[in-house]
Image (tube, rainbow, N blue to C red; front, top):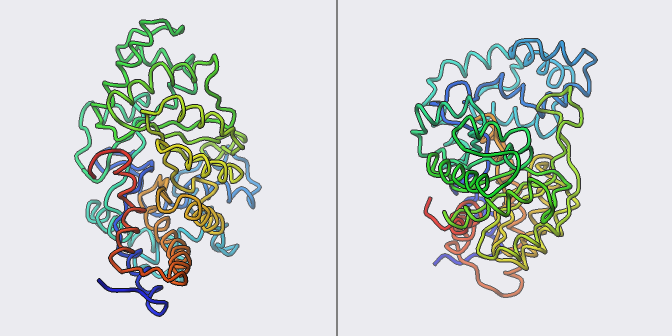
Length: 416
């Protein structure tokens, strides 16, 4: 076994972090077979809602006028404002440059037409393969919502043929707005009512089982507001406890809870309208304590929740902390949070996911994160060496593969 010392530690860690193949456990990507739901290309990158929000920090034009423009026109406005008239220093802006650089394009041409042309000539499947390779990603978990009629038709008519894209059953319409959406269940053939009577509970459970099987879901998932509370006398809490958790237990898949989203704070911004708030950790404690045979993947959106969450994970083995989600995905915060988790949980967590909505996001999210975690891990292993603990290259490789892939699959309880 190759023994590591202070002289070669950084090199070995950097090499292993760069080579490891990632399981990206939460994205909003779709395979090319899903038609217009498959998003890729420079115009999609530039009109991502992060950049739309940043564009309106400078722009004075009406929201309605902007959203009435074609995607290409929106992209041109954003590019001129955020990349030409101002230096692109934000994480989302820098991400676009990282994508272009990794694709081998000359960012200093600063010509959007050239970028479009160079990307458009690459055949789609070749391009998908190239993105996965550049990102070092072997597979992604999608976010799949049967309440979305556009997506539902793809599952019913075509299905997913690309094994790199794995499914997760999205529960947001069911849990967060049942009063509005229960009629969609009726349209889908489930005999439910507005009130959660015994038959309705049974039918909701049937719906969950049917769709877990249809899409072969790896887990169920829901984004929740900061004031999410369980137990309480609400549709969300009751459906969660009476329907979702029993089926998760029965079919042996985890429930992913993504907590802290304040929806549509500025509704004029469309997808960019959402914000965040601090949540109450007691709901997670209750779920982990009350349902020890269920497994919970949890990420929280507020920075203020991170220490509570990591301490709670020390208390419950059925809780797996994952990712630096959304507004936390900025280098300084990612570094701080990852270091804190290593200090508190050792290697028993999932450090990151991309939350990618556009295919090329895989590149910049993972290129940026690999550099951060390599630095954080180097400091941790340096401390081991200072304590006289011998570390081998094989052990470092094992640990990094656990963080980037194996921890997830071991927690889920199935093979990749």
